[in-house]
Length: 184
Image (cartoon, rainbow, N blue to C red; front, side, top):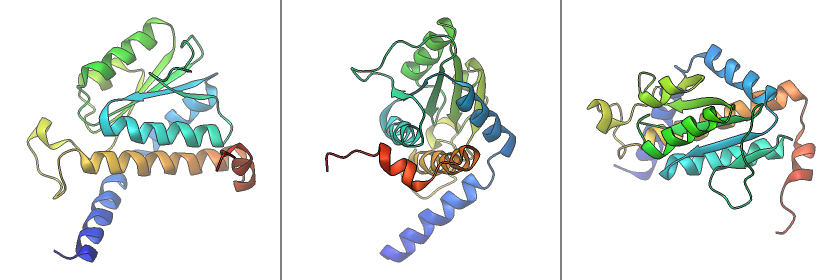
């Protein structure tokens, strides 16, 4: 398989998967983001990496956002929101984050490939990405390595939500540039 063939396969799989995302689930999550005092993101492994990218963009468009586990992350309190990413919806560490946030009175949301999972059911809200993790449901919806399609869709869907939030808030690229790192 050529490089071009692999690139087209990846792009096609991402487009097919995220095109099935429920608009109402996304709109509800965006409302939760806009209603939160602070936004925390969490996850594990590569899902956490995608959520870190989301937290960075949230900060760029003017939200107070943090990554759970970083040394400068404050305590989560009522009026805050935790958004966790988990392909399987079964990652124990991520479920512990959701439970801890809820116990402290914060709202919780999960972006997952498995809406029937314990993690999705524990959250106040979930967004179902139609990119299930292979080892959980034994399906083979992708030719990519296990979990990869979910992680790609997580990043793409989060970036799409950033575009939607920019539109809602009237945020321009110039506004974002002012918040971008200047240590380069």
